[in-house]
Image 1 (cartoon, chains in turn green, red):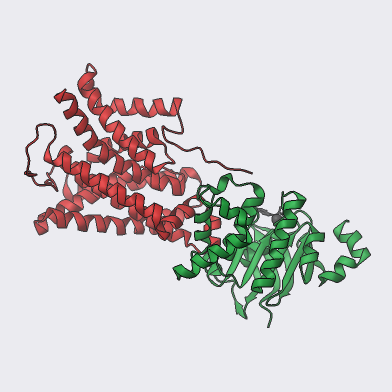
Image 2 (cartoon, helix red, strand yellow; image 1 turned 30 degrees about the vertical axis):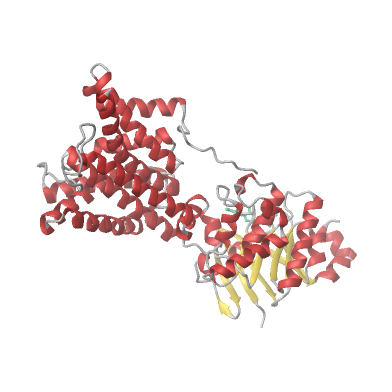
Length: 236
Length: 291
Ligand SMILES: Nc1ncnc2c1ncn2[C@@H]1O[C@H](COP(=O)(O)OP(=O)(O)OP(=O)(O)O)[C@@H](O)[C@H]1O
Ligand SMILES: [Mg+2]
């Protein structure tokens, strides 16, 4: 049974249909990427899973239909969403942002361990633990957003363009850490990207989204090496 | 010198009541971006409830505790039943709802308890174990009690998980939901707390201004002045603003010619002055945000 199974998913902003019935799935422990140009519907797909837009169709997580739940309940199921724009709590400190990430967790000592774990992945955050999060650099805020998601002990991470607005070097650094997180924790990730190259290097499986429809899918390594796909869809 | 000290201490006492109202207003403002114009009338109603409970039980402290608890619950219910449905309505509709709330409470109080003034005894004993010509026992009690209350509120927001979640829900509801915070309930809890804090202010001010349905209109105006003065997005600033306004008001009454007549005009001048010259308030933080 796949961890996440989406079928005939449509999403709406008022009357406008932004997703026109897409299907995809994700196996436990795997990384799936959804690629597409601006406005393709990548963010909307993640927002649909987190129940932040109106949808039709089916979304099953661990075999259970989740379309009837509120956003905060989705988090409680263990789905951690790193949103577009990073969702930093700008007035709170780095520490408090991580504490908020652990909001659904009960055991204080587990949470304390996880804070250390996050600092181990992102030593830069540890140096800034008392700093107001709104004053962090873009890259640091992205690290914080991923750290906040880890604090949930997620079964599934939804990552919305972690590379957005970052210098290539920082992007690379963040992707290396994501690879480590995957290796150490066996985390499952649904990764949305415009930067196809870097996402395909990390992911096992990929879907290509074009104006609200899936136009192609397959193993990441195959899409990456296919000349025609690269030229037609990925543009590099 | 004695007169000056007396005025200042009495100003701090009334100012700490303004601080309560200012804090209640700012708490709601931070969560909703709106001023709850009904905050004063809600506090007035709570005070009448305390008065009724005092008549029934004969114990002012018991009446106080029960009234504050009832106000907390009523605040939550008001948010869930009346405010939540207009959450995403246009600003104008929301303002109408606040003004509607104000009139409802004012009329209900008049209807239940009539427009005759009533007296509510002080929470604090006449005899505090020492004599002072500088400050009355009620005023001293008010200052100590509100400062302790405000400290508790501060600690709650600074050090508890729920307090942190409330701040997060107010500042960034989408992100808060994504980490599992029930934003709707945090808002309701905020209303409950604001309503309870307002009730404390009402019961504390009642022995000074007398209990009648319009008793809070002046206090609310000063509370607003305090909130604006200190900074509408800084709860600590609002508290400081309330205290400062209380002291300034008392000085003005004494030292400004005709000051005793000008009371509320003074509050309005302050409000307009702050809006003109320092819209963020004295302690208002400009949020640092990188994009
Ligand atoms: N809040 C909104 N209200 C109305 N339409 C929206 C809203 N958000 C997105 N859309 C529309 O839905 C479609 C998909 O948008 P979405 O944000 O999912 O794209 P995306 O693939 O994430 O793009 P990008 O790479 O630019 O982030 C677009 O046509 C967009 O205009
Ligand atoms: Mg997007």
